[in-house]
Picture 1 (cartoon, rainbow, N blue to C red):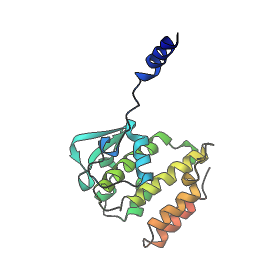
Picture 2 (tube, rainbow, N blue to C red; picture 1 turned 60 degrees about the vertical axis):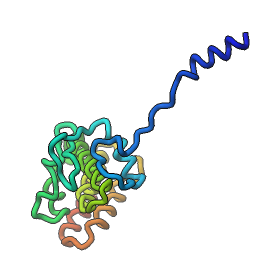
Picture 3 (cartoon, rainbow, N blue to C red; picture 1 turned 45 degrees about the horizontal axis):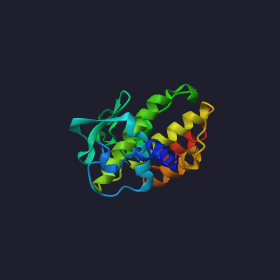
Length: 189
């Protein structure tokens, strides 16, 4: 009897191998060997299942052009603009009024491409100029979620927290642009 219990336990548990752990190197957009900060790695792993990588086209620092939904990073690449990173973000990722009527899925797809590309850039220790438009997109997503009655519960994703992230990373850019972002933080309906 005891042997059959051990055999039964092994059949139900001994054959099950632990699930493979996804490493940054398994992500198609992480092309380098530089360790990613935990927050960047977590974000990259969270979007891995919705991102596809081009096998032929690259964008910043050799990172493959990434797509989420119908949005490819190359379509909204701040590096192709002559404007400052914040001016680009304000123009490219503008919302309409009423805020709740904006297409959250499109803004999320845009953000996903920025998160993936940032991870790729960080993996090769590239320039982090992407942080301004990325944080601005996170800010816009948070604003839309809040307006739609579903504000983020993660303190790091609240409108106020992301406002600080945008303003901190865009320090040195035009005060008028910084003021525009601050004004947007008060429009949540």
